[in-house]
Image 1 (cartoon, rainbow, N blue to C red):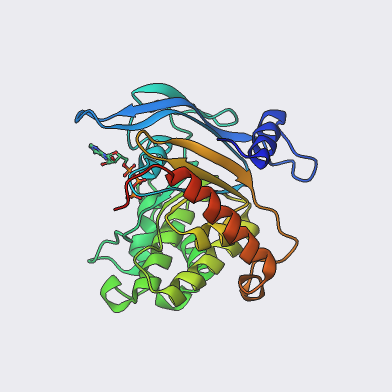
Image 2 (image 1 turned 90 degrees about the horizontal axis):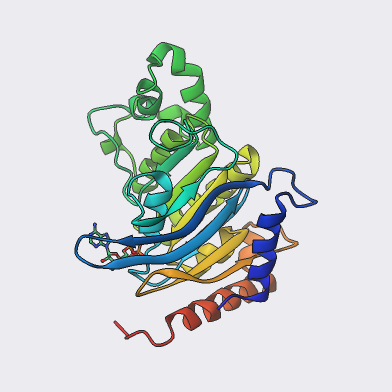
Length: 282
Ligand SMILES: Nc1ncnc2c1ncn2[C@@H]1O[C@H](COP(=O)(O)OP(=O)(O)OP(=O)(O)O)[C@@H](O)[C@H]1O
């Protein structure tokens, strides 16, 4: 099933640039990707998806529909069995990935407990051969964008769950990637912290112009954050619907209580139910 709005999203991808945003050129293209694990599980079947520069795309779908597998294949953390990933506007390195263009945020913050916040955020720059001294300004500026400039010398054990996740986001952003891949980053956090981090990510997305692909189980989160939602179906994992989410309102606390947001949640929820139609209840 493809919604009428999905056709809008697809055709704007094919057209290259939209009239309102010159950045909207295809950044990454998944072309008929199938993934069969050695266990025989077909995690993805013939999945095609074009993500354009500047989009905030959520991958939403039932547990096991292949969201993480799709994200990992885009990131080069796993191979496609058939099909390909193309980066039309990037220079590709020897591993077939765009050099320095991708960052990944996992559900767990995965911080090094023996390193300070500063040391953790330094890691991706250190791997590029940049010393702490040379990286200092960039690291402090990035910590400021997530509100942690006063915690540079703290250790992970001294931070709350939300603060640890902010460090993880700062570590992902410090190399100024074009594409930020986030795999259920806030699923383990309480609702208030989750909402605050949603607002942080939206602000960073607007300020930096970064492209985000965000995996979530949450209808509410996807409807709040996304400029576009891709709803996936299980067994095997594939795209069920792909549609743009337009709103005339700023996405903020006021939006959360607006009729527009309620309607967006309803549309997303109904589409998800369609995608799950015929699945066993678990
Ligand atoms: N390394 C693996 N080996 C074998 N099967 C796997 C592996 N990783 C994932 N799978 C299977 O592939 C399918 C898709 O898994 P995936 O984790 O991508 O789904 P998901 O939509 O991200 O799920 P969730 O929302 O629960 O995290 C599932 O059936 C899963 O059991």
